[in-house]
Length: 157
Image (cartoon, one colour):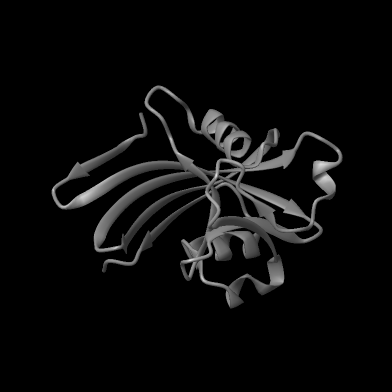
């Protein structure tokens, strides 16, 4: 069971995400029907730690294995989506693909779970500000290259 609770008009999410870098690009995902990109990952399940979450999510969504190589950030993320207010705690890990052939991938990937609207794209690090990447505070953290970092992203203020 995912850790998502409805509390006093908010949805509380515990989420884990991963940053995979290759040739000065970051792998992000987006729903082709939406206007934003997000870090790859998903909701933490009850009794599961964030490291296991990102490994599970990448395996489920892309059929790929990753190894964690560091820790980027903890983000307290407050936002509204589809009429709901969210209070999200996100743990952001650094990782790379295990398979040497997967490490060479530079093309758009597609979800293997049947979510046809979800795709995974490589974006150049020096062009991140040209994209609607959420939460926005991750762009600054990647630009400054100082990790780990704690960020608060509050779009509801």
